[in-house]
Image (cartoon, rainbow, N blue to C red; front, side):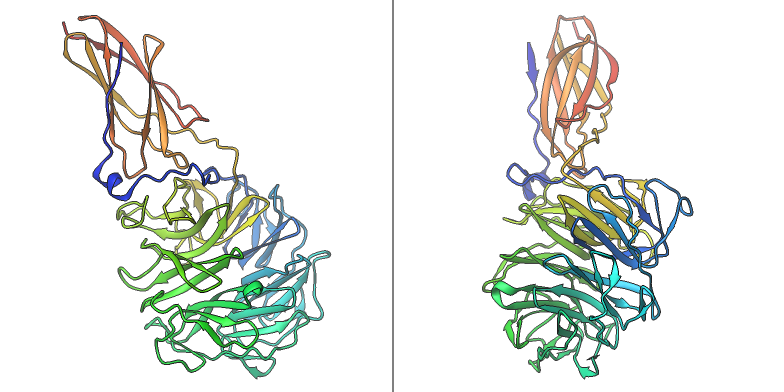
Length: 503
């Protein structure tokens, strides 16, 4: 006779609600083998089967290789096969200025990759903080050479127009305050927006960090740190605004979306909705994500996680993000304040619930914020940033996640046994947890024979005690073992544990 004890979820789990992903399957949390950099990856882009990484680095090296081992020279720019992850010979150097690549976006047809940052030369050709790469032959485009006065931090592209944002004040010798629009051959367009004021008190210079454009809606959404657009009253717009894609006039103010001392760091859209990540300055200032509707600028949801969000990307009903989240207690499926930052998250686009997908990086180098860039490429999520470890294993600058294979087995917990009544043996253990499965199955064997299969929900921060009571002959001694599986991977077996039933 088998008796399975009922196990209650902790008050925290009941308060936040379990995060089931039945209709929103996530990628696996197990990283694919990926080449590394010796510095920071600030931006990623995808075109025609190739992933491009831009940042501040000197070399790339093989998966698993220690720094200085098997390196290939790559000056702030590298190209990889999107599926295999192997490096490609396309490697123009970006030098001069601060020598960094900060933004990249491919044209809709994939033929041209537009690149921005702080540099004076691209592939040995003089350029002024922006360049274009012909993806077919990896040559720097002769036609695209606008003079931009300072760093470019954001780019988005339509069939006809390239939008750039950053900290510049002139483009082609004409006034363009932090945002501009150019034709695909580099001619400056009349789109003229005045960006003033900074939403961050300790950085008084306004700037644009992110741009996403929706040609179907004739709209450009820009984000960064600013408090006035086109002469609007101070704080009537704050860090986020929707603009007419042709004239630059305000079409959405997004009033109240971004509070004081918070700035937008990332923006992306899927044709229907747009998504942003924010970074707050100071304790408790908005650091999370927002989903909005492109057509009318309505907010769909806004989470309350703390720990600045640097990158977002939607894929098949899930919003993946890179941050250093440390308190998501008020977001469905979230976790309480803790010292161990969670740098990668997945949320339901439908209702913001945090899903069971918890691969992680460390903070790494630089500002030590971990992930800085994300892009989906042929079903694989490429992630770049400052990190030097992924899932506690050495890995610098780049990592990748796919739908399969799921190779990580949960760790089997220690367990104990007691007998407080004749013929009754009760086993107990603290629930295990898995990076990409919320419900785990426990297999209990008595004398080598399976006697119980128990499904229990758990997270790293919420691991309830699981018990199983077995009915045996009074006074008998039995050998027990315990295993746990996520449905794909089976842990090692824990045991044997010998327990004698009371008489």
